[in-house]
Length: 364
Image 1 (tube, helix red, strand yellow):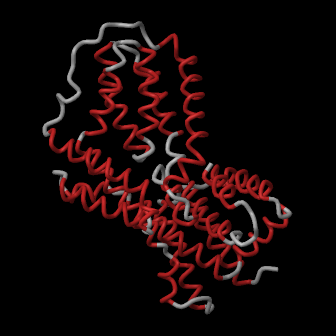
Image 2 (image 1 turned 90 degrees about the vertical axis):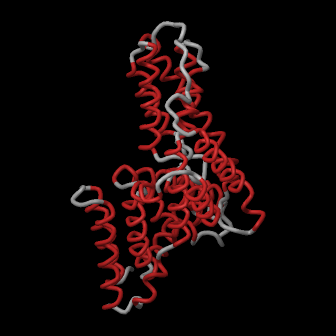
Image 3 (image 1 turned 120 degrees about the vertical axis):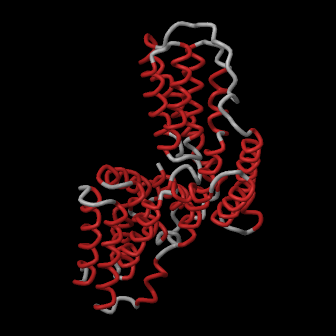
């Protein structure tokens, strides 16, 4: 039986989700209100001290998020991703089928590293240019690119904010994400792009001889693009190897962000203004709320309930995680779901369950 204190913290959690999902206020403000209430009641009821509150925030997650955001904001501003997208489209040689599949896969690939909004803006600009040059209907290309961007990102540690949260909590590396999830993601890309092709085939247009254009024509400084290319290659290499040096992904991301700001000719102030501070403050506030739930025994009670329903079966526990997290994500953001579930799954690590299966279920 849950105590009155536990019920208070459940109420704070539900209030935060209500404020966020009903859009009564912004995500960050909802989380900060919940964090303030958690802190206030925690001190009044003697659940924790003011000094302990800061310990609820996992600064590894914050550091990873900021590092990735800064690095890819710098690289995006260099024009590198636009050049890559235009080259992929150029080599379609005027064939709308090749153009369509190139756009789909470039869109999905970009979403592995960029936020959905940034990837959509980049691809929309590139697709709009080509549709105008080739006199194609832009709708099939825009819609398909947006769908592929929404699908992409599941198979990498840095593909989404929720993946970063899960990666830090689980200890799964960049390679682990690729090994366990890339086959599923690539299969999904292929099936989805083929289904979209069949849907839009009549509207893609006829094969035409493309006019000559240079993907570099809109780039003012090639050296900046080359430097950004060096940063992104180094970033990926370090993320593949960081486990060997016994350092976390957050350190790699932060160092690469510093390197990008140092060698790539972009305005640091502009980059910092483009960082998604809304998400960062939401995560910080929500972690305090989750810390309150954990301290009052709510998460332990949920863990025991899940284990009782699963009856010690890794498959059943994974299935419960998959479906319950999917259902919750219908009403609240994926970030909130990840922050809620990671400590619950973390409590199961000593129970002889297949932890990789559980974490993969949460990611999916």
